[in-house]
Image (cartoon, rainbow over all chains, first blue to last red; front, top):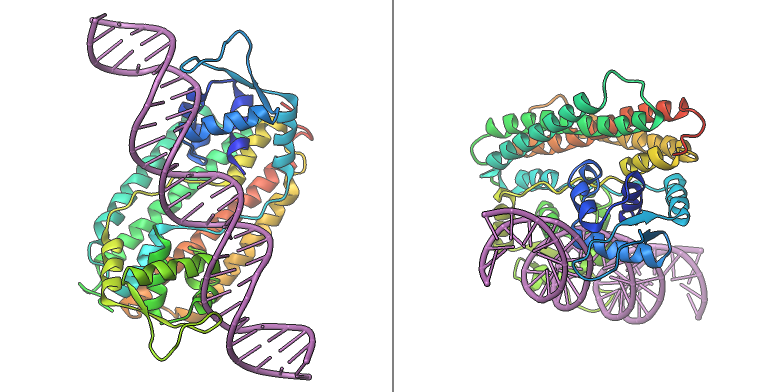
Length: 183
Length: 183
DNA sequence: AGGATCATGTAACCGGTTACATGATTCG
DNA sequence: CGAATCATGTAACCGGTTACATGATCCT
């Protein structure tokens, strides 16, 4: 039950239409909670009937007609409640680690290329995050909101750093393995 | 489409019944690919009709009667194919980061406790992984399989290390924030 | 007028989650 | 015998994914 709260957060930061939200989910919030436009429209409908958001007036509703949403007090309250509520961490799920584990059984043939590709992808993402940090978070000590957003970005940077280092190591190890680890 | 391959890997390591698999998914493979017994039974059924696994003979099938599965050659081939196939990384999804982002908008009231709780959980998980490393992976240079499994464990250790460090920092920052960051 | 693109949707599917059912075995 | 536990399932639901539909607007 996180998508509705991601949307509430985004709408509080700035009232938007469904498509604008979709675009904003392609960066910023979307870096750690992605969503497609279908999901977003579905969820906007629910949030509206629940009384958490409403369409800004002066817009008639019709297919293909832009609708701007804003958060109602009930929506803000719900977001505050959810933010403070205890939640257990979801169990990890990582395909790449699973594949390495499988490779220990069926061999590493063909795996190295994809490891290199992932390494490159993570390097790019890391560079993107570092660019954002340089641009949006100068030396430090901003408003509380900025300090929290910076903290979130730091998590992204540190995670990508971890992956690039780990993948570099994985590539090296796989490369120097006896050519086939069959069985 | 990863659960069937997780199961194939587990069954190659050791033929098992559904419940045994469920238990093994509570550790080891389950550390990065969890599954409930309902999922596992459903998937075992599919894998059997697809000809990837079969029940070991000398067991009649009846409700409540134990069934042991083993992987067939086609199953091993499918696992090797999947392991080598290129796969794009799935977009990140992390509730905790989302909550911090929301807290930047609605305030951090009530959040610190849960951050501390998560920190403690990650510390425990880290200790568990380190214990496994001490027990199962002495100084190094084992068989190729062991090197790969050790690599996977290292990922777990490094990830938990990241989270403990980041959460410690997050707790500190939230604690020293002006008591309410409302709007 | 016609094509691109903006904008909002519908429908079908799939994997993971939760709740519940039921038979077999073991132990006091 | 009865309770606990081992073991295998069924059913309903829910969020995320993929494919497709359709109206409005802008630009040439």
